[in-house]
Length: 375
Image 1: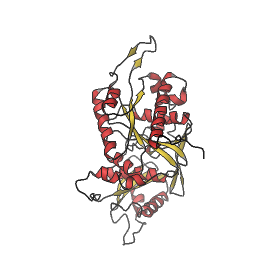
Image 2: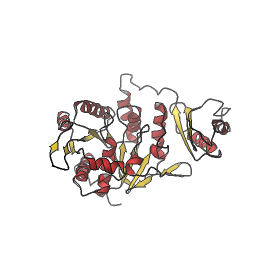
Image 3: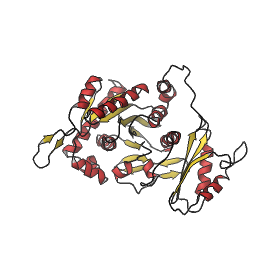
């Protein structure tokens, strides 16, 4: 914790005013964990029993209001975290992920959101977030209403990629969050709520609770597609997302190297286990074209993702080049599809967007109308 105008003692004193029906208060009963104070931003978790999230939401709100009243507090990040183990499936031999994905998880939909597309990778460093942002902009360029959720709690990059790191979402009535608009996209990220240089040091249950609240409390409005930028790897966050909302399909991002493809295969298998269709694989950093001589070089190899798609009978959604313009525009907070939509680099993402739209139409049924519809 750095020097702050708010002290831990003040926060604990405020939490001590939140009483419980069974007696005592949240502070004396030891229900608060992970207290962090960064300037005027206070973050903490409230320990609850598994399955009590909805019933304990008023308690979370009461704690947030109590701490928000402390002089010097500018923002409160309060999450619920389950302290008990989740119940076992009815059939002990059943995979827990498959069991839950096939029941309650597939019955939960975000109001007014027609399709949810996960952008994922088996490992970090393959350009997944850059792909997710430009895919979202590409879908928008095709006439769709698009939202973008950065689900990477530990390493949110959306504010920087969109150049809106200083903007904060508006909170309505302490229960609803208005997403930050950038380039016409409705966006949400933990990066809007926590300072960029602050590490989020949370255990798995806290991450799970934060993701659920981002999904439930954000006022997305009417969307044709919500793109979710998944964290790298396969873990708690992925399972939570798959169990919380009905994901229409996933796009797997990989680079051509064998080691990246091995992890991409794991990512695809993870979605298979939670009953989420894989829309296809995209090969990022597929090739490099010298801006001076025009010579093409395949620095990380080439064609590995396409071969993997063929081997697993998954669609191959295209190739994205390794290009300085993509890096420069991303660092500047003006993604290439927005900064230079007529460029060859942007066209690779636009082609990806068209491929995803086609897969979404197929998922709806051959005779179904396009994803976007007249209201």
